[in-house]
Length: 148
Image 1 (cartoon, rainbow, N blue to C red):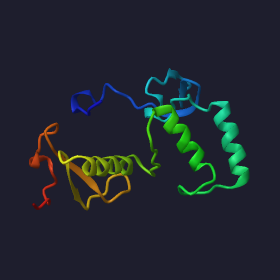
Image 2 (image 1 turned 45 degrees about the vertical axis):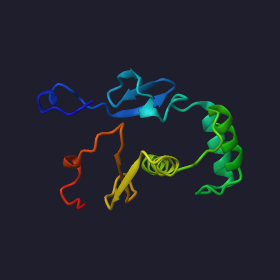
Image 3 (image 1 turned 60 degrees about the vertical axis):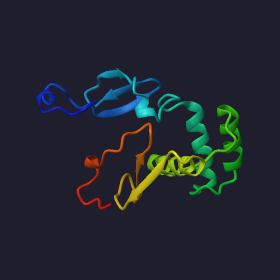
Image 4 (image 1 turned 135 degrees about the horizontal axis):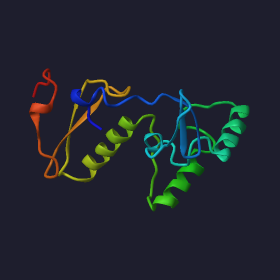
C-alpha cells in the first residue's frame, strides 16, 4: 500500500497488543483477521503451540547464533525435500538472501549483471541493481551520488 497525503487522515494505524492463530487484537481490544500473516512471518499462525514448545525446549539448551548449529543440516535437507531443490542457503536478512540469489544468477547466466554500491539497506552495505532483458535499466532511479 503506497502512501498518499490525501489518504493520510482516513487510515489509522493498528497497534497490536496480542495475537493468536489467524487473529490480532489492538490496544483498544478490537479483533482483526491477519490476512497479511504478519507480512509473511506468521504463515503457521500467530503463537502456534508446536512452535512455542520447540522454542522453549531450545532456549533451555541455549541460544546458538549463526549457521553452524546441530540441526542446520537436517533443516536444510527438509527444505530441499519440500521445495525439490538441490541446495538450501540460510541468510540473516531478506536483503542478504536476495543478494546471494543475484550472485548465483550472475554466475549461472551471462544475461544478468549486478551493480553494487555502499548503501545500507536492512543492515547490509550492499545494494543490487539489475540490468538485463527482463528489467529495464533505469539510471535515473539510482541515488544521486551514484557514479558510473
